[in-house]
Structures are given as C-alpha cells and as structure tokens.
Length: 318
Image (cartoon, rainbow, N blue to C red):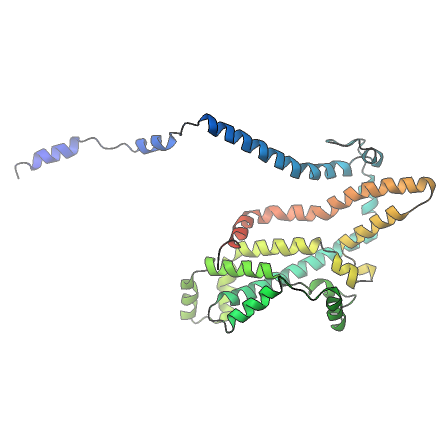
C-alpha cells in the first residue's frame, strides 16, 4: 500500500504517446529509387499512348462531322475542324425517316431493356437458390446456348412461325435474355445478398414474389444498372434483326435508316452529282456516328458508378 502513491506518480508523469505521431508516420513517404521513377515514366508513356489510340479516332469523328465535306475528303482534317460546315447535320435532321427511326429505336430499346432486365433478374435469382428443383439441369441448359446456336435459317423460321415477321416483336423478343448477363446476375445474388436477409423475410411470412419485389430488387441497384446498360447499348446498336425481319420502312430502327442513307448516297452516279454524292456520303458517315452514339454517351455517366462493381461481380467464382 505504501508504494501506491509512487506508482500513481509514475503513471501520471509517464509520457503519453502523442496522437500526432501515427499521423506523421503515415505521412512519411517511402523514398523512390531510380528504378521506380523509370518504371513510372514508362508506365505513363504506355498509358498515354493507349489513351491517344482510343481517344483520337473519337475526336477525329467529331471534328470531321463539323468540317466541310471537301476538306475531309481531301485529308486536310486532323485535329481541328476545317471550314466549319453543319451541312451534314442539316441534311440528316431534315429527313423525316431519321426522326421516325429515332422514335422506333427509343421505343425498341426501352421495352427490350425493361423486359430483358426483368427476365434476367428473375431467372438469376431462381438459379442462385440452392433449393431450386433441377438447378444443375437449368445451369447446363443455359450454358449450352452460349456455345451453340441453331443458325440463321432456323432462327428465321421460328420468328416466322410465331407470326412476328414485320412487327416490333421481331426486334424486342428474340435475344431478350443473355446467358452471360444471366450468370453475372446470378453471381451477384450469390455473393451480394446475405442468406440472413432471405431467412428474415421468410420468418416474417413473405412469399417468394414479395421477397423478390420488396427486398431483392431494392438492394440490386448495381447489377440492375449494369444489365440495363449492356442491354440498352446492344439493342441501340443492333440492326441485323431489323434488316432480316422488317420490310416496312416505318418500323426501321435508326441504325437501319442511317445505313440506307449511306447506301443511297454512295450508289448515286452521274457526272458532277457523283462527286457531290461521294462528298455527301463521306460527310454523312461521320455525322451518323455522332447521331447514333450521342444518346449512349449521355446515358453512361448515370450508371458509371455501378459499372465497375457490376463487372467485377462476373469475375467471382460460383
């Protein structure tokens, strides 16, 4: 008991570690060696070259679309517009078929994306549950579709026999569910949805449909955004099904309308008009790329924050 005050004095007078010391240690940087600097310089040079390879074609398309047709055809356009000309845009937007194609494409893309995301999520959630009857059979069934297909003629016969020729259903229904996206969503549910949530919902008396709508979908925003992006871009850029199954020009999507415009401009012949049509076709080639890609560029920033997370989900093992 006599030593108690002494111990207390030692405790009170002992130096207390400062909270700033760990901060100073964390701020201390490791000294870079000459080899590290060389490595970083080479890495930055390689990344810069790759960025240039990717970005310059996009920049050239934008610049060429605003340049005169003669300057583009003569190869005078490199980094900046030459003899700024909006004739290509005026020619495109004055055509009624382009606006009809835009409306058709927006309609096809919206309906196709909504159905695809809904069907993919429902099937992926079912496959992610170990209690699903014949689960292995369905996994093999969907996997086979990733490697084997019936071919174009059987595909056309199926669409024709179902009475979908020359209708919007021929664009919307085929390919509604992608096996790759299905497995990506399935992996997301297996790794991102805890079993405790499912068990809690079952204890509260929620049935399967209520659980999927009220619990699973609200916490699946990342994979929904990624699936919507994949399906929307794929449908927006698609023209092959429309070229095969549609004969009514009023049902053509934008991509098919733009293809017909370029084909008509390039096939025109006759003296000076041939040269003028060649210039116009060369200019329209860049304008149509901008017109068809602009909505996709506007959509991507809204789902960018979910993109990396959703893509990484597909790399996780089952």
